[in-house]
Length: 394
Image (cartoon, rainbow, N blue to C red; front, side, top):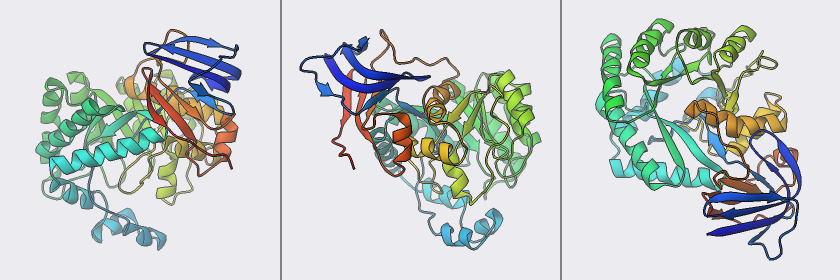
């Protein structure tokens, strides 16, 4: 199977933008040629478009049921997380709705969400459990996420996030023991490649988080952590110093020292700028510039932050976190992929798999400036065109 694209304005290889005109040839699922020479009768005329490595969404809570939009007026009126919990909101509200949903309903929801993400240029998604809060439900959610990975073109990488909140129907210490007991089963049954703990005010303490991570590290399960989001605990740097962790996520309260340690330990700092808006927060990560830390981006898709587009994450990283457009694209592609897999990612080059996205924009800054638009025209995986849209210029 062949595919030829001509007259592109340029391409982003995962680390740098190369100005066009560019033509790309694909044969049998592999990029065989990247050239400045035009192609006569190409399959796709890329005029006014650029090609990029696909997005990797580095942090999502993909599997859940229920609607928490009723929380929005509470937040606007200044309700705290604890007050929202008291009024029937928060994570525990979603847990109740998710537990009673059938496997079929949950799988259908996951697949529909993956469809929307793919249409926006995402081909790899890290997806957490965490709306079960007992071992049976957490296993079920991970099984469904693995099923979605089998049948959907988007690669789903499941993370066990049983330590997402303290359950309403079990004592705290007893549930932590349950989490530790489930870790070997997750490894045995290949249900997830990593574990995540929400360590913050109102969730799990630093001591509890380290207790869980001790077991995970011994079992060979990858580690990531919700870190320093609502208040500063230092869990990001503490976990990075003690374990081989994949990513520390959120980091709204983190400090320069934290980012320096993450960089030295080759731990990805995973930013979710859309979550900042959902929290009604004015806190943004500080001290990361110049540290050399690998930055990844995630949508933080969840029932309290229904954001599916990594284009949105890129734009918010530029406008809120003051990343350069090219650095934000790097974070949303190779940066996130490294944080999710722990491996050096492939880039767009001759001889690599033909996984790429076309955007109806001549440059990355031009795409970022069009704040509310999905500019994806084409999504290709292993040479197969998965998405083909006609996006009109305005």
